[in-house]
Image (cartoon, rainbow, N blue to C red; front, side, top):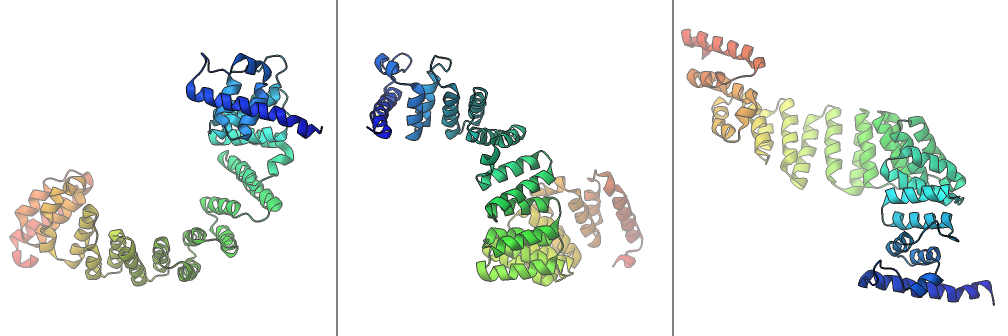
Length: 398
């Protein structure tokens, strides 16, 4: 009989006991939930746990091991703690897994994958020092998958070791070829370091290698932050042909055109974003037009803003630009009802100025008296002086 054939009855027996463990879990048989004495005497808990793990029952494997004594005679302690680590790791209990894998190493476990699991357990806990130490101890096994290169790199980054972090990305790509995930990590870090030109090069490579919409957005953001507005515009226009009027692409195009000194075109893209994705972008369109000296056009976009507080603040500025003081002062009840006059005394001063320009000095003074911010006292004094002069010589203020 071959060795494999001889092991089949034992595995079958182990699976029968595993079924008993499952039944015990459901029914709660026994004071401690243990298997019958005859089965416990015959079955190695470590072997049983291995079968349960293989069959996809890490919770039951953990239960079997927790009821066994790792110090008992004949127990394979390195394997015991390794299986306990796997059982807890597969259930997402990284702290317990790290403790178990560390015990396995202390007991003499020499399989390098145990160190890999130690690193993968330490990383979610933020224990990057342990993760890096474990990867070093794992040797070549720590380079078996690009995700491990990313883990190593990110740990170095969290420990504020950027040179080592980029070196880990380089090593991962040298071993596994160009990896989009590693490239995206590199791109994000280059943007954080404000190395926009290098970030743009990485982004272009990602897009050329089949990157999708997310890569286009990140690349455009890098170009915009690097003030490479023409390159960003060209990249975004090309992406728009492929992906259509994506929300983020439209907003980025608006910023690119704004950077190139074309506010009307920028406002047009904000307006399209507002049409397709919600009126919150109407405020941006209005502000761009206002700064371009087109308050009347800006007012039309402002009318579509739904956020009443933001809408009224912007509208006050636009009405001041247009010198529409009757419309401006007519907003006083709404501003008061929304609590904006108490929140923002600049709005109250603007109302006072509007009433002054309409010749309604008592109303203007009523608002000036309620100012409490020291920075506005000088402006309020100047406005009071102007009102006094206008009262003495009204013809000068017409």
